[in-house]
Structures are given as C-alpha cells and as structure tokens.
Length: 234
Ligand code: HEM
Image 1 (tube, rainbow, N blue to C red):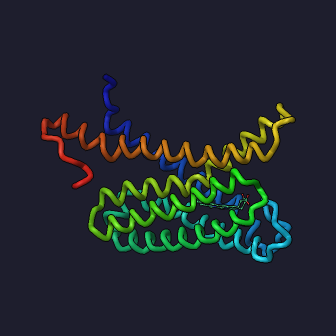
Image 2: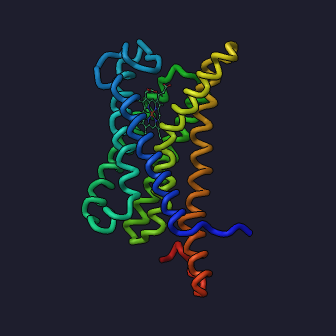
Image 3: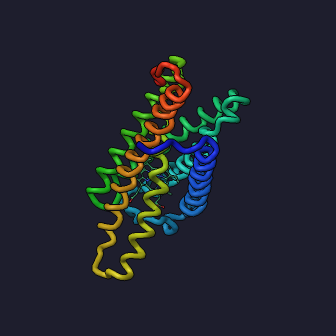
C-alpha cells in the first residue's frame, strides 16, 4: 500500500494544479475568444458556412460566455472566498451558470452548422448535453443544501468546460506531429483532439473526485481512529 502524501505536500500539489488550471484557462480564453469580438467572419478560426447567416454570430455568442465560465471556474474552487465571502461565491456561481446556459445553446447551434465533420459534431452534441446535465445536478444539489454533492457535480461540470483548453492543447500537439507525418489529415487530428478532450477530462475529474472528495475524508478518519462517515452526506 502507498503512504498518503503529507498534508503540506498535498496542499502544494493542489496549488500547483490549481495555478496551472487557472493560467491555462486565462491563456486559452485570451487566445481563442478575440477573433469573435471583431464582428468579422473572416477572423474565425473555424470555417464559417456562408449560407448560414448566424453561424459566425453563434460562435461569438458561444465563445464569450464560454471564456467567462472558463475563467470563473477556478475561482469558485478556492476555499478562502467560498468560506469568507459566500455572497460573492453565489453571485459568481450565477454568472457561471448563465454563461454555461448561453454558451451551450449557441454551441448546439454552431455544432449543427459546423463544417468540421460528423464525428466532431456528435462529440459537441454529447458535450452540450453533459454540460447542461452536470450543471442542473450541481444546481439541484445546492438548492437542497447538499454542499458536498454540489462540489462533486461542479468538478464534473468544470471538467467539461475545461475540455475547451484540452482540445486546443491536443490540437497544437497534433499539428506539431503533422509536421513530421505530413499525410495526417487535419480533420482526423481535430476529431481525435475533440473526443480525447472530453474522455480524458471526464476520467481525470472522476479520479480527482475519488481522491479529494471521497478518499481523503476516509483516510483522515482512519488515521484519527474515527469511524468512517459517508462524505457525500456531510
Ligand atoms: C464544454 C462545452 C462546449 C461545447 C459543446 C462547445 C462547442 C463548440 C462548437 C460546436 C464549436 C464550433 C466548432 C466547429 O465548427 O468546428 C465551438 C467553437 C468554439 N468554442 Fe466551444 N464549446 C464548448 C466550450 C467552450 C468554452 C468553455 C470556450 C471558452 C473559451 C469555448 C470557445 C470556443 C471558441 C473560441 C470557438 C471558435 C473556434 C475556435 O477558435 O476554436 N468553447 N465550440
């Protein structure tokens, strides 16, 4: 059996991960959103269907609140503001929720008219449904006063929001590989990056939930010689 890391090491590791998450969320927002602020479809990073008047607009309506949700997410996971300024946590939570609702509606529209291929369209639809479902569950659990369950559903929801970061990281790696393997078609790199961004993030989120939310209270209880309580019900 592996020994659990000392609390200070574990806290340092958590802060390093949090910092990486926050910096990459800000970086991807700063890089991906501006082409949709100009109002010029020629600036779009993905091909725009010239026969669909609202295609570019739907991407703009999707990208701006999507970027806001991406940036707000890491702040909501910080303990200090959540405990000291619960009002602020609530307001930012509502802004996050509204952002995800608007971004997912526009994403469903953009996915319908996407010129990037059927496989990635399916991935985007799946992502929209999962994004809305996890948000609804997070909202329902906090309305019932179940903070622990709310946290779990928000970790799942933000992991899906964060797929926007993973997708672009995988895409950058894929494009680097394409320089050595010229025959690799771009569409396949895009498809693989899209699907991987969802699947890997879901697995990482579940691992994180087990480690931080479920396993650590059990470990703490065991080392203090206390009976193990069901952490979901605290
Ligand atoms: C997690 C749920 C999300 C879904 C289902 C989704 C869906 C989509 C779809 C369908 C497109 C059009 C892609 C194409 O036609 O090839 C798109 C593009 C885009 N999305 Fe999202 N998206 C999500 C999250 C986000 C987030 C959180 C951001 C925040 C930055 C974001 C920013 C963008 C941008 C900037 C584009 C334009 C294309 C690009 O620059 O890559 N998306 N998204």
